[in-house]
Image (cartoon, rainbow, N blue to C red):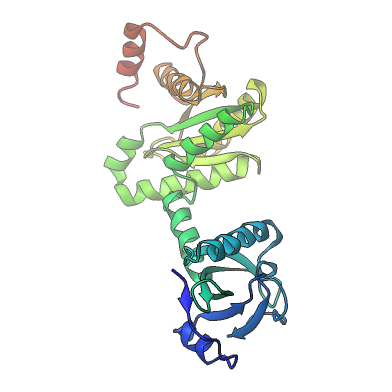
Length: 306
């Protein structure tokens, strides 16, 4: 139910209703016009409809919520809104509508409580970004990678996928330690950034495995990108000190299609094929994805020491 009281018109009840100083309270009439304000808002909202506070795309939703709250004489749920701040920047708030009646059936309008959630939204964005980011390299992680593959498949966006797996990385870790392995991963991430295009999507999908999604690319373009990666790695390997392991990678290429799981399996098989042929190579997705189990097992066995 709404609130029943005799209005005083001096703002005392409005200030009491705000309750917490960080909240803003607005009194609105039956038509939704703001008649009183307790707190600070950009401009002068008095005399304007409540929904004018929101950005244009949210105004109709707020207008309908206000009408529903008054019609049902029931407090609304908290509604998240983007408002324009004094500097023009978007600021996030949540608003609750409390209908006010005088007597059993006479609606006076509503008191609306508005509180800022900009900081909460910022923390939520940061948490979401952290959940989708590999902390070591700054690339998107496997969760984000799979979501992007699914999105491209749903939107029927053509393109290509390269899976890049560092060769003998486990041996490197055993010989030089995990700290050195982490530095190697960070160095390789920097190299990938240099040789790929700005529209390519870079991910670290596993310990030593990276992915490059190339929207709109055909197999020829994917080969060119993979070649740039192997060439850059060859230059790094040529400068390695005697006794150091060569810094190489095996790359598997596949075209994106409506079945993103099939595209990923294809690229994984292509990586396995590249490793089975001696590593530091570029593999292509087999023409038939459903390979005999014995052939797949042979590739895995040959690449065990990858």
